[in-house]
Image 1 (cartoon, rainbow, N blue to C red):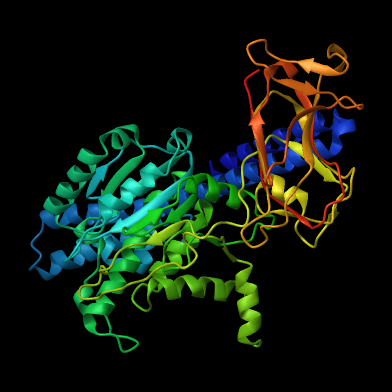
Image 2: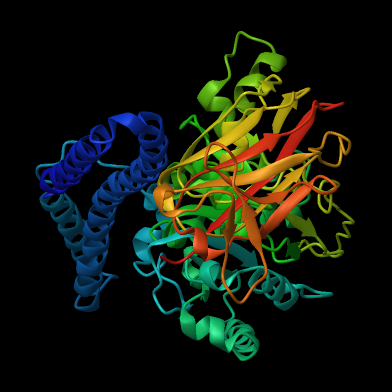
Length: 549
């Protein structure tokens, strides 16, 4: 069955690839356009295929766990009907267990490690990996899964304020493409139920829609935390707290891994910038290298750490393997060390290698607001210094297009990156007649556009005496000279000698307007410099909004 499922996945991928090649090759005159569109779609498909492959592996682990649970259940049934004080009966029980394990292991020379290997007490607690409390509509298939662990705090709870900030920062479209999982790390079901009811009361729409879920672990998920070994000079209470935190994060990730493409971990005392979901999703999809492990959207703790959902099995297994030994942030760093650090090279080399796997986004999307830690008695006034800073660029999801420019590019600040929203464009001393050209993959109706030049570090690098122009698809239907637009407006677009129509110009470094639908579908859009510039130019924002056909 596993081979068959894998075959279906591979076959689907090959069919998709073949169709893509056929469709793209049919547009030989727009090869660059097709390649860019193909690259965007290909990256997303690859990530979903990787996720499907990991799910097949997960099913194998679940099968092994099920067999172990069957063995426990069978043994429990036997125990009910024997006298455990009788030596003969106890021997029969043990022999039955051995026979059953041998029977279940037939045909499997090797066993895949699972959570039970690192938490062996779960062998006697078959329901230890099932949520004790679950409030969920079963939402799956989203782009971003947000996991937020919380526990009972002695002084002040921030969970409702944090949820409000997260929900308020979502657009209607984003609310359909994510899920927020609140993990209450308590085994007192009365307390858990009360917390869940408070969340349901304040966010009833979001809970009913499946946007917000609440879960809690069963008491028998945890081993005996009172007997944890003290390490690194930490007192008993701190070692117990950090060990439980490792287990809490692992349970949450195990629950979340099947729900979406990306998983981001937050804390229960933060605020978020509006549009954070789209920003994180776009930044993840823009990564050219596929070997990254973590994308960081905050510099603090375990806030804003984004993983591929397909990598969560590896992360969880590592956490469980060393859950009694070290704090969670140390373990996260050790994953990277194991992957890329050479034991015979220095720390600088290790840091460079890890930086390729742990990529930081600036400015931060989340800010820590809590004063009282979840560790009793600890006060922390942690603030992310990058939160609140104005970004050097602002990214948007623009229509598929090939972009080009006659302006000399400075270093790595290319126009392609600016159009994708991953960086800004930086050009050297534009001359009269220089252009930035956006050629759409297919003709589109343009509802509105916005271009912003300059940024907070270089506010003087702006476009001036520069126009924004479009080239209609049905050029022969347009008149020479001035194109009169919708009769309800007095607007008019002046036509250039090469068939473009001027729809705006840069004023104080910015250009933006609605585009009249009289123009119909648009093939190209361009920014044209009319006079020699006195400074370099930065294009920090490109936002083109398609209209309805």
